[in-house]
Length: 476
Image 1 (cartoon, rainbow, N blue to C red):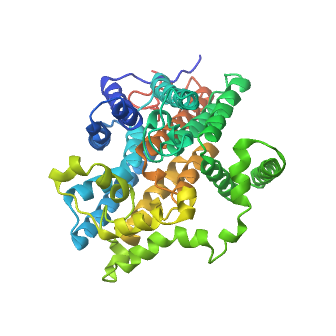
Image 2: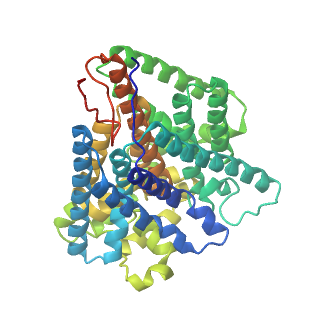
Image 3: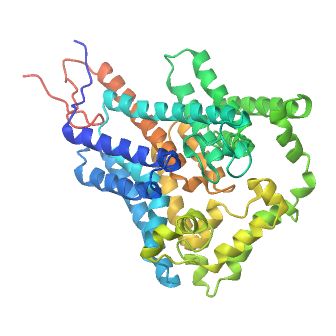
């Protein structure tokens, strides 16, 4: 008798799935909707939808699997710890209530979405639907970005600000670092598709990845390639206990890096000129080089505003330095947020002045003093950084069991040292969605193998409310 794994399609599960899709759409598409005339308030919808989805998932979940329950509790505790650090910093520094809300949701919503996905019993049909939303959205972003390039070089689309390359932003049009976010999403999803869609020809999967690299070159987003190379190098270091994988990754990494450096030095290709230029400026990268001084200017300014040792633990207050809340949202949406009485801090403007007056930073955002880790520490201190790292550690240990998920997490770690892409919801929630899908697919495959190997005379596995809970039923 053939054993079959059955997942019941319950209405509650479908409603939660719809909320997850709505959460993803609310961070992926609002920028392009804003550009075509939708009121700018559309950019704040996700601040309500994602926490609502998180709450519904917790209070309506039917999960009975102990592993899933433990993961849910750990992520919830991590969110509470982060909220505690956020609130403590706000009380110490007299930050506004809206500052606390925006800082908390912006930094924890990827984990909120991930928890909602873990809480949901996903059948193969559920997975296919969620996966389709991810892939179709990524294709729209990629095609739109390449279309923008040709429209810009032909003059049909006008360059409104920044350089022509900076205006190639896909669905994240027009934003300050939209080209970087768009390319990051394109490459990450292309890698996901490359390793996940094994029934599709390798040629088509590689074509998607090559198209993403083409977008990287025409949008002058060279730092994204550096991020993935560094993340790959860090992934190699995690293989110390698996000699075969360690050797494979070391060889692959070394060959790929050598080939790339050779191409930079010997191939006459316009897209590689920027790498050749910056790799040759070795005088910038010493311990007291201009690159290091420019990068650390933000931290130096933040420390200059410390008035008590408690600032090292709690920072200067949520939204008071150069995280995405203080560095962008409170500035760009000041008229919209004014009735909510947000608070600002002089450290933010001083760091922006340092950025705008440094020729090196203006040439490349790689050296910007505004980046996630300094912003998070400046806002919430070491306690805030610790609580945030706890959430990341739970995700790494509990959910990132495959190399792709680990690579995606490591890219977010590296992004945090360059700019504020970690706090870009369109990117962070896309990564969370892929990690959640990978986790569910692994669990379903594991359970399917368990069901296939179980003797039919002993039990018939059936999952009533979750694909991770199998209740044996004896024959009468």
